[in-house]
Length: 94
Image 1 (cartoon, rainbow, N blue to C red):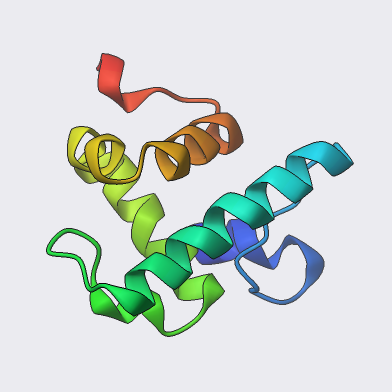
Image 2 (cartoon, helix red, strand yellow):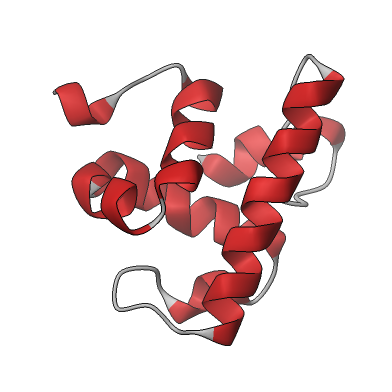
């Protein structure tokens, strides 16, 4: 489903629509940094497949957000926060 959300502009690019420019800029900075970190240093949590491109990174961390939120929040708190803002959910509280 993350790819469907990502394709809101017609192409999956790892940048789902955000209403405010500042939100789009913050998203890009956080997710790009997360992707680069994964490429530089493989993670036991975040699948190496997520390093293939921004769209796959978004899909992989989205899956972790719902399935293993504590692990994602511990390893990549800024990524967890961006996903929480996007999905308007806080799975850590479930």
